[in-house]
Image (tube, rainbow, N blue to C red; front, side, top):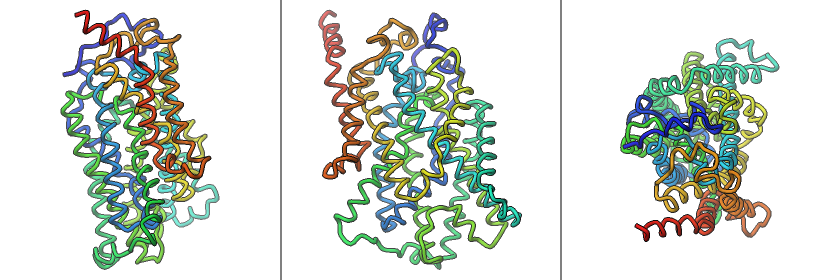
Length: 476
């Protein structure tokens, strides 16, 4: 059962605002279905399709690509569930939880790193939504294709739609995801049926063989692809407390996530894999971008329905995965001045500045550059937070002190430099593979390497916490 709320004394603290406050019983309304629907709505989206499709374009067979996605999502589910526990137990969001390990001010380091990655994803999803609107308008109104800045205009329109949803707040987000999840699964099945009919059956659809000449050649692509799959949801594996703080119980949030994340991601990835494999047979080339694929369809009605579904899916995942976290993270910088909605607005503008069209330039930039690059930063953060909560503090947090200066999490003027050092060691070890060719494997496994190094470093650097706990046991 969730613990009791923090005392009212924290409300006067500069580290407190209502959006960062521990949730009360009335706010704990999310059950098993809500968490399953959350992952269905976030997994069934165009980037899941593109992640799997990019593996086909990179040379994998459908079996190799599907196994990579499934294993990657099983791996990321572990830190996801571990970080979910304190959110439900104490009703606190990710940036407040980070205060335990990084300090009440040092938590801003973790929050800003996570927020910047989310802003990049927000921009990517908004760009995809804009492309879908542009293709939809070009299908229904052919004259639109002559508009020189058509994609840019549609990008800004979709960006504004996201902004309006943000301003409605967290409960509107929960409602939107719960309603749309079953619809999106149905649309995915229909897309798979189209590929089945157009390619002449499942056999021809999945007939494309692996294009790797040897097992070592396969490993060169498999390792970064697996790392990219883990990195895909390593973002939410950090800020999952932003959602689980609204859970009715630990069992409901854990079961909802465990049932929905790996199964839905694998199912929708299969759609991306099967359809992309079918495009090799139908069009002679692997088309990894479903918006570009839809632009080749001849039925305006079919294109319109499919693109509207893509827009709905993109809006869902963009708000759920890429706004809730940075909104809380930016709020954590100045809790008295920045609310959840203000943080969401900041996310929108930073996402624009990150030029998402360049991050989607090709599948190598997407997997090796974007996914692998930020995994080198988020893996170490996860390792430190999990080590702090489960190994150092044994799941016991002083709730009031998370919101107060001078308390248990003050460390050195609000910053735990041991955590910062552990973070630097993990990130540095993962990124050294970019500059030292024979250590490239460290970057190819950037999330796992960073996670392991930072967890071990943090555990080694924090002996005083363990000694105080041992001393307290002896005294009792």
